[in-house]
Image (cartoon, rainbow, N blue to C red; front, side, top):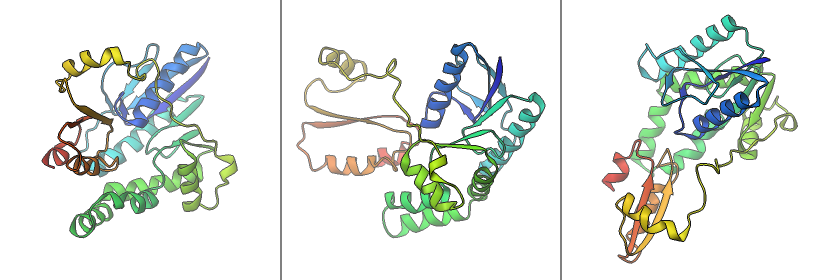
Length: 253
């Protein structure tokens, strides 16, 4: 039986990388051919059935401390346990397979800064990013991953192309693309007969036109634009957003 380890700071079902890691761990464990270990700093909820969890904790505060600690602690566990295969899903330096999910930091910044209003908000966000030791460390780890990892897997063609643009020594043809897919056991298209009960369950208006969206980073998902657009629609329209983390800015709108 092959011993496989997944490396990701959070074992959770909230967030794209986290959801992917959770489902991958569960799938591998269910195959029966793999002894699966999930190495994380923090665990939110139960692990998939048959998956062993090694929690390394977060004893060092701050973005820099958390990033550095997990990179070092995950490497310590990797060497100690001598896994057959390790899969890095976050900021880890050494692994056999690394999943690329957000694109290189520099190009991610260049694209995502457009989500912030021009002028002071955009300037402050740019400054905070460049002055963040934790984010600069993440950029260093990205470069080491690109140079030291035998197999890189991208979650989209866009991310693959951004990666080869940043690291031109990589061959796009050797980076397979595996898209995230929704968990159809948990999520499915709404059925008309379910709508009244769901409106009541979540305290949504019984009558009127309802717009629903979800996300873990509201600004990058454009929720602030959607909220402003709501003011241009008839009063019968209501907006419901799933995902409450970091919602104070959106609620202020």
